[in-house]
Amino acid sequence: MNNGGDQTVSRCQVRGPMSDPPCAFVIASFVVACCARVPRMPTAGESAAALSVLVEPGGKGFNVALGLHRLGIAVAGILATGNDAFGDMATKALSDFGLPGIRVLEKDGSTGTGVGISDEAGDNRVAIGLGANLLLAKEDMARGLYGASLVIGQFETCDEVLIEAFSMARSSGVETVLNPSPFRAISGRLLGLVSTLIVNEVEAEQFGRQSGLDVGNGAEGYGALADVVLSSGPGTLIVTCGDRGLIAFRRSHPPCRVPAFSVPCVDPLGAGDAFTAAFCASLLRGEDFEDCLRAGSASGAFCVQRHGVIQGLPTTADLSTLLDQHKAQVRRR
Image (cartoon, rainbow, N blue to C red; front, top):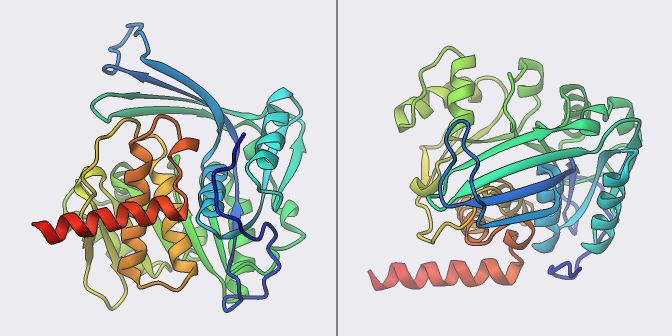
C-alpha cells in the first residue's frame, strides 16, 4: 500500500503554538469503512445494485490525520480499537500510510465499523457503529498532547476525552478545532474550549435546533447561529455548504464567503474530512484565513471526484494543481 504523501516528520516533538515545524495532535477515531456507490438512493424496502463497493480503513479522526500527513504536517494522536481482527487493520493502515505518531489503544470490545452509500447525484447516507472509539477515556490522555501546535477532534469519540484534551491544549495556549460529526448535543463546557467549530449544513441546522434557532440554509440563519457560537467560546464558526461553497464567521470580522470549486461529484463521503485536514494544515502554516478556507474547499473538491476517502485525500502537489487551475479559470472569466 502506497501512502501517497509528501515526506514529513512522523513524530510530534513540538513545544507550543510557535513551534517549528508545526504539529497536529488528532483525537482520532477508526472505523472499517464500507462505501457503496449506487445510481440513485434506494427507497424504503428496496435492494439496489451497487455500481461499486469499497472497503477501506476510515473514521473521521483517521481520515483527518492521513489528510494532514499527505499535506506535509507532522501528526501525533491517539485512537482506540477493539480486540478483534478489524483492530489489526488499524495498526496495519497506520504503518502502511506512514503514521507512527498515532498511538493505538486496544480496548475490550469491537472495532468501529461504518457503512456509507452515495449516489450519482452527490447525495450520501452514512451509518456508523463507533464501538471501541467510545471506550477511549480521559485517562488515556495522561501522556499529554506532545506539545502540539493544534489539537483536532470530532464526535466519533466521547465528550470527556475531548474536554480533557482541549482543556490541556487551551491551558498551554494551543488552539483547538472541533468537527461535531456525527452530531450530538454540544455541551457548553466543551464548546467553551473550542477555538474553531466546523459544521456542514445539516450539523448547523441540528445545532440551531439545540439552540432554539430555525437556521435553515441561508446566511441570515447562519449569522444567528454564529452569534450563539461566538458568544460561547469559539472565535470562528465555519459552515460548509457543498456545491454552494462556505461561509465563515469570526469575532470582529465580517462574514467570509468562499465559492465552491466546480468539479464533478463522484463520492461526497470524505469531503468534510478532506476540508478539515487542508484547512488545519494551512492554519498551522500561518496562512491568511481566507487562503485556509480556500485550501479546505479545494481539498474537499479534490476528494469528491474519487470513490472512497483514501484516494480522495490530496497531497500538497494535488492541492496546488487544483488551486492553480481554479485561478486560471477565474482569470479567463
